[in-house]
Length: 133
Image (cartoon, rainbow, N blue to C red):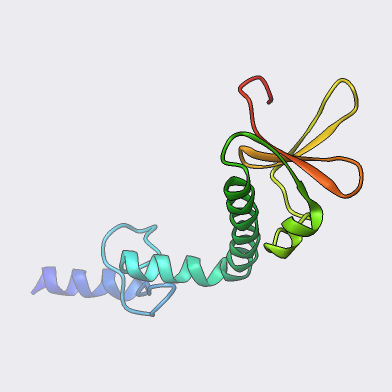
């Protein structure tokens, strides 16, 4: 009986902790915030939804650009017109990095696939070489 009264007094002083996502009671560690991995993932996905949507859109554009460059340049070096790239849906505003040569040429890369703007709206397509950082 005494043990039961002590337990009730201790439990009365402690407020019940609840899951930050679903509100269910939490059991276990004192710093636990979620009742399950599902609730933790759902909570974090909801918090990062806007940023994730933006990054997904940018990554899709970069993947499409890389795929277009790769399909048009299977041998490692080729010259194509800017109109041809644009007709395939290439977006010139998105690239992963830039490489400037000592002579002043500027290569734009979508991962390992790159291009150099030349005269008359033509582009030289290239594969990234090991020495290009």
